[in-house]
Image (cartoon, rainbow, N blue to C red; front, side, top):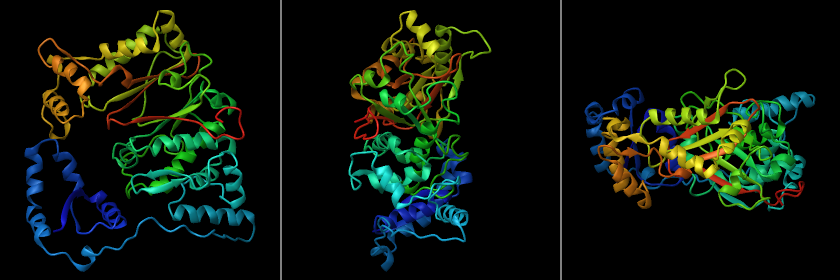
Length: 458
């Protein structure tokens, strides 16, 4: 008997192709109009009339016998590896322009000019690592193209990265392809999320990653091309494209390079972030994380500030948002070095600052919202449902249950460790708060290894 999957018109075509690619029999899709569905899902009462209008079609799809094509779908699978392409022109400039037109027309590029990935340049990129070209890192969601070292090298060449950067790019892709990381949500969601890529340890200094003034801007080849190599790898191996299956409604504000920067370990008063999560001093690592666009705090060069004032302002901002996704909410707080030093001078460690933010952002029980989005009832009902189905971990469940009573203060995250604190930025500077409401697995950090052209990351 065929299955039925509800979707919206924007996603219908990709859902069909995804089902075909997996050789799944009997997938029949009912498309709900997006302009009505998304607004109506705030309550069951609004959504019910829309769903009811498709009920007869759903029943028909359930009982109607499979067609021969549905019973024996074509096994598209992953596209076969292509032979080398040859592009010619009247001169080099003409051939270069034709390469860029070809790549963009086939959705292999991001709209900016690329470096043609010739065999010689790909070989040079592969020389930056001891990892084998045929090593498989894993599938890249949402369409599950298989990431290998060689395929990532091709995208790194296209991005203009140096071979010295390649081990950093591979470590980041190790994070994106980790089975625990929810890459599909970041790649395809309407939320216009943008990955954060933070390079930590000695390799960041050796490769001249920017961790200071202008760290999210232009002018640093390492930041720019590492981020772009990852963008192209996720595009080409995840098989995404805007308005097809990348449904970020506004697009991603750092669409070409992501939020790629390094931690300023030299000026941080605390141990490197990677050490705080279990790596050894002297290691180099890359964190990839999912995020909305950052909120800026602090006075910069305009207004006076104190470290305590900054974190209290941040805590107030977070608390004002309520307890919407307590099972999955995470925050990345990027403190500029002067702010971090000021906080350390008043006794804060990274751990104690995490605990302070955890406590100060708790929401009084009486202020829990009476409704939440997606028709999930009240915030209290949503929290209790998240405890019941295990989305809130058993070891944290009692903390939430104890807070759900008059006088209680409800956490906005599962644990203090969901506040990730990094030191980077200019002097004077601003402090950035990245947040992500999506899933329990929104952060991965991987060690840089196999480097051949740098002292660090070997």
